[in-house]
Length: 261
Image 1 (spheres, rainbow, N blue to C red):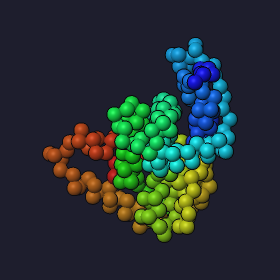
Image 2 (cartoon, rainbow, N blue to C red):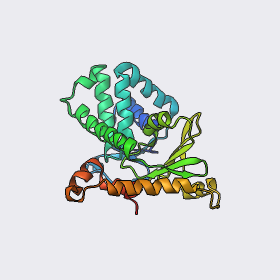
Image 3 (cartoon, rainbow, N blue to C red):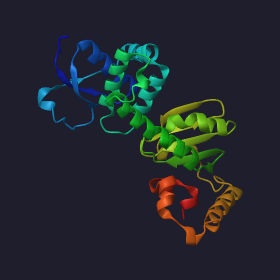
């Protein structure tokens, strides 16, 4: 097979944008030296071999790749690709591409090839994302704001939409917002459906009127009771901060009710 050329592929950061890149690489028979966001200025060590190529997101091309992964590889592999895409791991795009490329070669037995670098590398990323999702289902804390529940957090990975099934099931009859402050996005649920949307402090203030009745006094009381309970059940002589950090990483503490002063 004739190799067309070497390229650094630039895309807009969307999932369909990345799938469009996969499509372009596959059909142009080029070798991707790097795949990165348009906004990123980092240069690959091998960039002297490559030219930058801007890829415009094409939904039709992306859907072809999406459907090909689903039908020619497996639905599990498609899920793995998406979980890896939501990670903040540097170089994830090339890892995803190599995984898909191998999948098109092997087919629906891809997940059993754990000994290959392509599968192993992607599974490590998926494991990190999955672990953080599990952590956050237990670590996220809500406060009450004008008839809806609000939680903010700062996850390592872009996992907010992955939390939807858990919290929608848990709070099916409640309005709530889960706000990723690092990425300015939020999961918003209105008791019927949830959406993922851009969100910032200004929008939160617009949702919350400037009155003293924003947070009911009894709710504030419950917050204080919970904080006191958390302090009182602790046995000082058995405090093990190292173990605490293992089960509840310290980077999450500032957004948790029981650790706020």
